[in-house]
Amino acid sequence: MTSAVKKAVVLLSGGLDSATALAMAKDQGFECYVLSFDYGQRSVTELNAARKVAAQMGAKEHRVVRLHLEDFGGSALTDHSIDVPEGEEEGIPVTYVPARNTVFLSLALGWAEVLDAHHIFIGVNAVDYSGYPDCRPEYIAAFEAMANLATKAGVTGTKLTLETPLIDLTKAEIIQQGTALGVDYGLTVSCYQADGDGRACGQCDSCRLRAKGFVDAGVADPTRYV
Image (tube, rainbow, N blue to C red):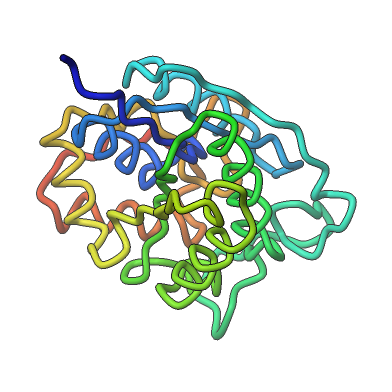
């Protein structure tokens, strides 16, 4: 008798971290249902990257959900009147999108219930990251607790686990592990303001963290720059 298929919903932005999280989920034997969001972000080329990564990784299904977070704005990623900073900032940067991971994870939770999937993977990182509050371990633990109180699956005894395999890794360690798992980082787009062809600016916070990660990992950087 064969064992039941393990299903997971995997959040995929098209960037380096989420692509690695998808590779890790696949390596752990999960059938991966991949979820991306067109949320009014400045760089939509990351969604093209997400489609390529999902296909390369053999996702069972990939859905792109349209949201309109630009209706609220409040972030350099969703409001074109706010410039993307090209230097280091103190505190929480203006590229933080209000409540983004809470919105994304809530929708992933709904799909997980429908699929009878008991795991959600998200590529948050609390080491080499931009200081976003919804990437911290305390937030992840709180959301997981809420999820198990708020769902039919949770109250009937089927625990949902929020998987964060990158949370304690440096960017270099993420790249090394992803490379070992066959991630093609040339398909990914991390830049906050990539152009229409997916070429990176090389100046924003995300670009700087990514470039340093490849140097520290001793891995050739396949990023295409403007």
